[in-house]
Image 1 (tube, rainbow, N blue to C red):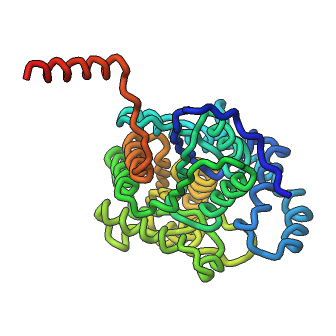
Image 2 (tube, helix red, strand yellow):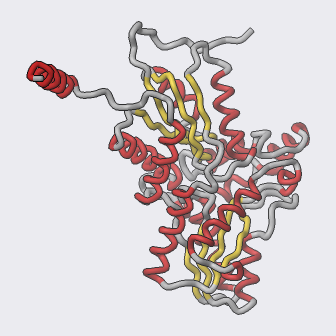
Length: 364
C-alpha cells in the first residue's frame, strides 16, 4: 500500500504560486573520504548512470570501487574546494538567485530554488519545501544543456519518485534540452570572445563534453548528436573553420568504450603534432566543478604541457556571467508561458489608477 507524505495545511483562497527548480548533478558535502564515498554510492547506484546487470554491478561497486576510489576522489575534490565550499554548489546557488532576480525584474512572481540529483540539497527536499510555501506549479530546469538519459532522465526520475509519494501534486513541466538555444550559444561565444580579446587566439579550440558509454548512443540516447550540434553552432558563431576546433569527451569511467575522441589523449596528440597553444572550453557544464577545474584545468593542462605543448588556456564555464543569466531567463520565460506568473500590482497604485480612470470618465 502506498504511503503518502503529510500534506501542508490547506488554506481556502490561497494564492497559487509558480516555481522553478534548477537542478544540477550534485557534489559531496565536504572533500572528506566518508562524504565522497556516500556521494559516489548514491551516484553510481543509479541505474541510469550504470546500465549493467544489477547484481554484477553491486559486487563491483561495493567490492572494488567504494573501498578504494573515494580516497583518490576526495583528494581531487580537496584540490578545487573553496572556503565557501564546493564550486559546483556555489555557482548553482548563485545562478538560481540571479535567475529569480532577473525574472522579478521582468515582472514575474516566481520562486527559484536549486537542487541536486545526488547529495544535498535533494530534489525531494526542495519540492517538499516548495509545496510548504504554497507552490502549485513547478518548472523543472536542468543545468544540463544537452539531453542524456544518464543525466536529464535521471533527474526526472527523482521528480517522479517524489511525485509517487504526494497526494496533492503540483502541475509539473520539464525542460528536456537547450543545446541549440540561441541565447545559450551566444553566451558561450561571448565568454570565449572575451577570453580571446584579452589573451589572443589559440591554434586549436578544444570543446570537451562529459562522456557517456558508446552503447548509450547505439541504444538511442541523443546526447552525442546534441553535443556536436552545440559545437557546430558555437563554431559558426565564432567564425571557426572545421580544422580550427575539435570536439572531445572526458570523464570516462571503467573499461567500456565511451564516446570518442577522449579529451586527454587528444590534448597529448595535439601537442605531439606541433600545436603550441590550445584553449579548452566545456560547453556541457554550466557551472565549474571537479570535471572542469581538476580534470581539465589541472590534469589536462599537465598532459598537454608534458607532451610538448607550450600554452594551455582553460576558459571557465558560464557560471554567473550576465549574458548567460539573461539567456537562462529568456529560456525560463518561454517554458513558463501560460502560467499566471505576473507580479501582483501594488494595491495603492491600482487604487490610484482606478480613481484616475473614474475621474477621466466623469469628465468625458
